[in-house]
Length: 234
Image (cartoon, rainbow, N blue to C red; front, side, top):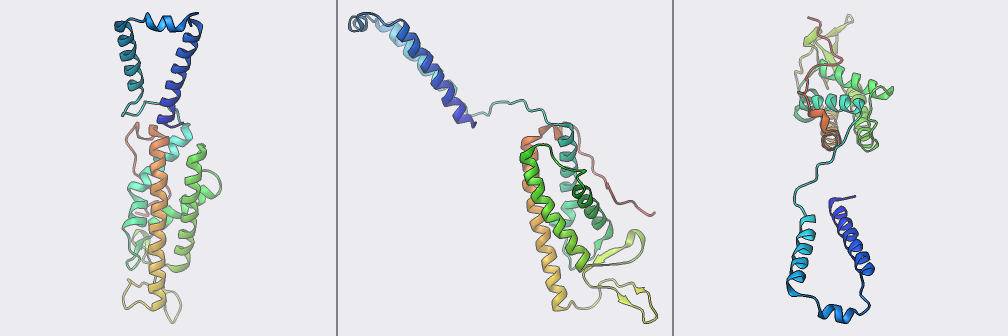
């Protein structure tokens, strides 16, 4: 129930209780009783009634205790961490006309896999709805990355490019650092990847907003920023 509805309910219950009290104490001759009412008590009652009703309308929100499940706190902290670091870098700031460090793709795929097999999710049903929408976009994005990009480089320096690496005529893959012009097909793929990242980012931000509302315990401690799936080869 919204705050305004709660306020009106309290006022209604109070007035109902007063009506029952008046019914209980109703005099046998109400006309004479009204004539006998003195001005000072009537004024005092009117002021008290006004103050009571006015005090029910508060501009500040009431503090409501909410205890979230430990699982929802852990998942919420993971997502807040991602939105401030790795996913922010990929989904909001990166342009696929440039190479994407391979560690970001590894992190996206690991997150997708953990969700897909049911190891990550919210017990809060409302949050789970938003989480499901985010997962849908994430799953499509990782599929597009697997389809449109190819790695170039070795170890921690590996980058994902939309332009596929060239093949040696004697076999093997030649490293290519995104030189030359993009074809029309590649430009289309770059645009689709950029757009899908922005859509996924918007879905994540809607989820994070709900996490802040529904699971405030997420911020009881400092958020830890780290890689959960990618491991450096150095």
